[in-house]
Amino acid sequence: MNIILFAGQGAQYAGMGKDLFDSCPAAAEVLKKGSDILGYDLEKVCFDESFTELSRTLYAQPAIMAMELMCFEAAKEKGLKFDAVAGHSLGEYAAMVASEMLSAEDGFKVIKARAEAFDRVASSTDGAMAAVLKLTADQVREVCESVDGYVVPVNYNSPAQTVIAGESAAVTKASEIFSGMKARVAPLKTESAFHSEIMKPASEEFYEKIKDIKFNAPCVKFFSNLTGSELTDFSDMPSLLAKHVISPVRFTDELAAVKDAGFDRYIELGPGKALTGLVKKTLTDITAFNIDSIKALEEAEL
Image (cartoon, rainbow, N blue to C red; front, side, top):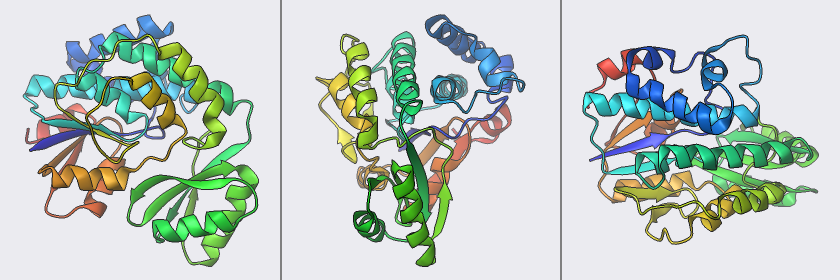
């Protein structure tokens, strides 16, 4: 069975999706809808290499979702069939559109609200994130608890990769301890401590902006970062998404639940191969590949 996956912030790059835009009218329509909702030109944001703010949360989140939905539309034209969706953090919003939980228009309204809320908090707080490799989640948690200041695990990405977030000084101190334990530590190019309590003002603002948006039950299974399992209660998605902003991404648990549900083909749609790599490091006896271009689409066995 097929599940489609969508990656989160950090996967963006200049020029992403240009070949899809040029070759697939349905993909081009995604950018048109997004530009209309966002109030700025997504073509410029995604394709113009002179645009220097693609890494800024305000633009990165809508641009990544747009790229993921372009890949989705192009793959559907080639015959993509799927029985479930999942995303990593930001990627859950493309998953909501792909599963018909949200219309494309409402998807862009929601991601606009999220990006604006994140951007406001990022500009007024001191937060940082870092990926810790070669240690277990328990080891990472123990170190975070031993450090003065606020730092916590926020992304459980694979059995050997956990992301921490918190106050910059506390993240730096924890990173020094991890390095002394022979772990590999990679600071992330994010503007604040996403999925931590530092983002509480963003969570509250986000909820107020999306509380009246209509969310439907999805047309396929939807797996959640927040619970690390299949989500079955869609009665109050605005509250759940607001909670997601300040809660860990339980991707390792989520992948285990997906595998237990019988899924053996993992198709990542969107920029980069980050989730494809995490799937291959976490699960066995599965097939995983990504589609981020016309060439990749032509080579994919859908």
